[in-house]
Image (cartoon, rainbow, N blue to C red):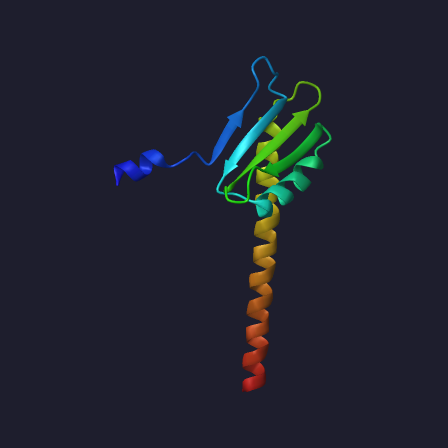
Length: 115
């Protein structure tokens, strides 16, 4: 079992060119695809301190995305990434709560109809 744990890749890796500032970073998100990439890019681009945000999938057989963020004003790129992930979590939680509430309401109306 220990061998399996050692071969596991980190969920998030940071790739930065030598001498590049921390406002221009590529993050590698392992075990992710367009589902997270597109939603996260959309949320991060709403941040006025972000100059560029995009992602690419290196190859269809690889389950990872390269996620690039470039910021303005010396802001470290990790900050908009962190904020974007938190904002996306809030949105997803809202959607899940709304969905569960509506399903519950629907089931209650179906029970009323059956009675």
